Length: 461
Image 1 (cartoon, one colour):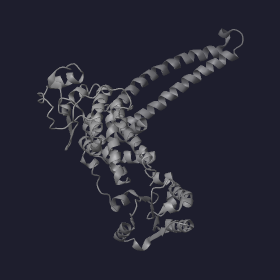
Image 2 (tube, one colour):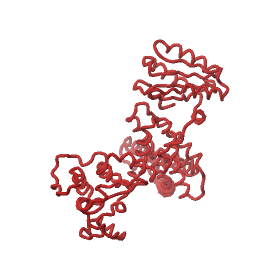
Image 3 (cartoon, helix red, strand yellow):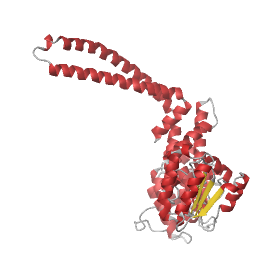
């Protein structure tokens, strides 16, 4: 996928480069085919030759000609390889954008594991990706242009997908986007990610006995040991610090303490270490240096702070994730902009339906009718609530509206499980023959989350 997206980026950003590369590939293949044909002809003549090979004039002539031809082709191939390397070098400059696109797609595709209604096709994503590249701000400085493309690809992927998610799942989506970007950049290690998701693994594993300190809970002590053992580089000295030093971290406006702030058993907080002492302390090179004790807020990356909060104050993880996303991606990724029907309508066309995924008690019909009135289409809206025996009625409505250019709203599709296959075929037929569909026709659907709702319709809606 990354290579496909790289071709898309380069063909839009540097069409000359992509054309040159394609022509070169054709030439190289043609030359290799010609060499193969020469070899095959010589082998054939050798196979068919009778008597002394040196008496076969055709073979001798062919060998002489092929020597000259193959030398010329070999020279051309070497020149072509040099040119290909230069083209590849220029293409590779855009790979960061293709990598970001690939990361975004697989996060989006994984959302189907959260809810069966979250279906987005690769075709849909590639259209969105290419559209982002075409519509984003241009800049002659390549580094600035690449940064614009990276930012815009992330923003557009989020805003286009988040509007199709329930409110409770939007933070999951933005967190997964943020984490995958950071994992790809290797700022989150696999060990840190696994510890955040699964904890220490074994509850029954042997750990050092808890010190007899009144405020130190067993869970807190075990967490400090597990962090020290499983992630020794960032959390070196955690189990020692927790019994004698204030241990706290901040993410955005959230401050979390691993131990009570005003514990009388603490000694004075150590002086703040230098950057070099931080780095040496993380590597375990200054184990006995009092300066490196505590100061966890400055010693940890933003994701390591999340791991810290998960280990010591799990009830604050959701708040911490919100601050983490805000800090690393931006405010808009935790407060998605409201989506209105005008915005959604602009992304529709005659063969791309709009699906309202319902939650209990919600009804988009009122807002839809107001929108139809604004568009002066109130008299051309046909609505039907699906249920027992309503499938054929809906088919007739669609068949008539496809020709007249009216709008059709099929409500509560989840109640017509037996008709879903027929609906899928109807939508598919329209997509295959868009020329036969009136350009003003629009299809609106509403459904509660349902596994029997056609995936193909969701992916292309």
